[in-house]
Picture 1 (cartoon, rainbow, N blue to C red):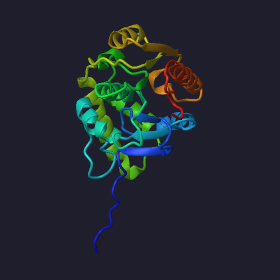
Picture 2 (picture 1 turned 45 degrees about the vertical axis):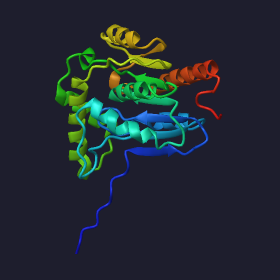
Picture 3 (picture 1 turned 30 degrees about the horizontal axis):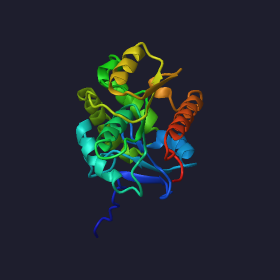
Picture 4 (picture 1 turned 45 degrees about the horizontal axis):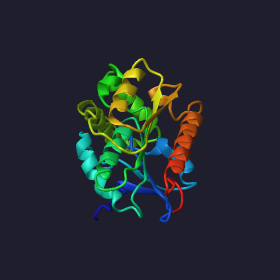
Length: 247
């Protein structure tokens, strides 16, 4: 008797269907899952259509990407399938790098979307010297805390691939649109901010009093949401076509 298989979900997942509203896209962090973004999706859904991009590699038959440029090339066409051109891209850690690179590509063909990066780095070595096993373990706890045992190996392989991708990549592209960097407490924060500032003429920086893997816990999350609200309100006030609202 043939075994029934279920096709994996698409990489672009609708989180709040509002086709007439501005479109916001949450781009996966290292590890590839979207679960840490639930509070952000809920907040954004008040005004926006919201989608999330998960990584390939999380399901049987998928192979994870270990190169940022490959991911950007894979995800860029997905944005063309949205009801409207995205006006906001958000990502934590590696997800912020992906959001930045996608935003820079979109700016070549039309209005530059706003980009929000939550403790992202232009170079992996800005993050300091951390053993790969420790990073993968923290990714699994933060991104795949509730992964089913049958999916554990796929999640771990994807986390390893993304650590490799982050280590290889250097952000050199500039982005002309509004941008927000939320930078966590770290001895490397000054360098982190300086490097992003060189690439963005419209960068705003807000500090988070927490560690890199603690941005979505109960203590830090209110600040993350407050910084996001402040940034979006400012972007709406500066734009003739309000970001995050109906047109």
